[in-house]
Length: 154
Image 1 (tube, one colour):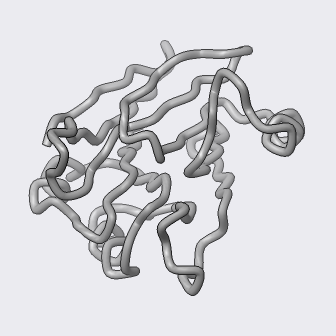
Image 2: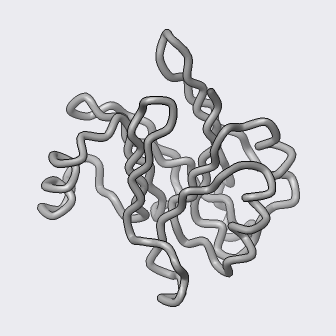
Image 3: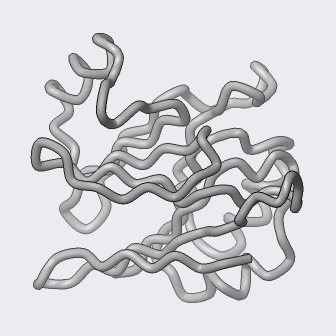
């Protein structure tokens, strides 16, 4: 099972992304999407559960938090997450949902760490090149042995 992950496209889908994600089973978008056309383009590759980000138009028909089960694993997708010090509301929701993996964005920086038995994962920044930021997306590889994360530079 391969799950692609990206965040912070900010209304720009790098033309390499569909090819990088070819053959994945799902694509998770952790917010700051831009126009709905970004999701429509990604859906031509695989189903796309997505959460909205702080810069997304309120008219975008996605929830702030998306919880999805893929191949028996629970993914919690939310744009703004502080893994080391989650807000009280987020702590309560995580305790209730008990996800295997929390996917987030917002910081534009890759992050991959298991905290309290849950993997917190930020794929980095996928939008237009700016401010010298490193641009990355990721693929999560699942098998019987567990999960392997792969960051892909853009």
